[in-house]
Image (cartoon, helix red, strand yellow):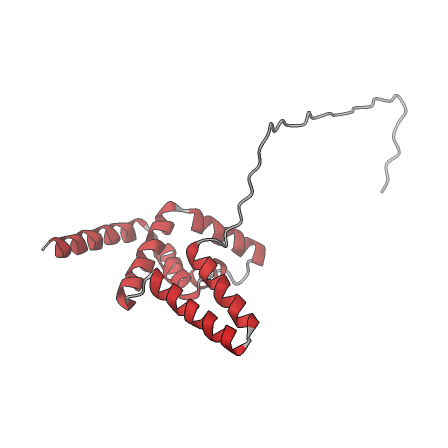
Length: 155
């Protein structure tokens, strides 16, 4: 009974989230789950054929920073994992099997790819930069020169 209630509650929250997104935002989320690429998802969900790639990238990034969109994507991922009964452990085990087979065959490139896949699943692929110390803005200096002589205009 408790499990059924939790599923109904989750479904209600999901529908509530869906109502807070526009149709295009919702499509963006679905395309992102399908492709794994925010820029491609933006191109498919929005009218972007006349946009520069930089504009598409920036707008896709902005959408990915939207908390409602983040929540919807996470809900879709959870639903996808549940449907396919996939856990992080399953993925790590498969990558470990691939690594072992690659090492047996001497295929170092595949072995490295499997290790990098494990690192990505575990979140070790994120680069962080820590800045420490006193950060002081540089003063702005504006030099103005006045002259009584007329300036020549270049045409």
